[in-house]
Length: 100
Image (cartoon, rainbow, N blue to C red; front, side):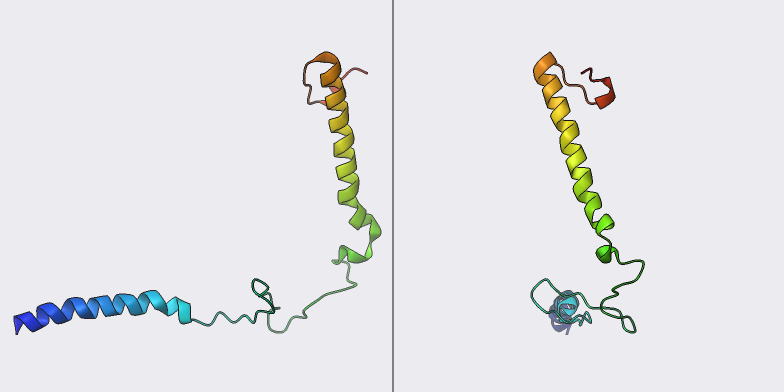
């Protein structure tokens, strides 16, 4: 009788562990994927896209140009730093401290 219990108990424990380990793989996450990795869907009761509101910067060219402008300014500052380094041999990060 003890031999049966000694064999059955570890077998049940191993089975329970396997079931618990595999349970998340079978869980439904509530998402429908359009393509692999593209599983976004709106919350129930909300529209899929909100266009033309004040929170949508897509319709303002000024908002769209902000990043491009900041990149241009960054490249100009870096060009000044490189030119100063080539001229003086010292790297100065602060643009205001670079003498022309």
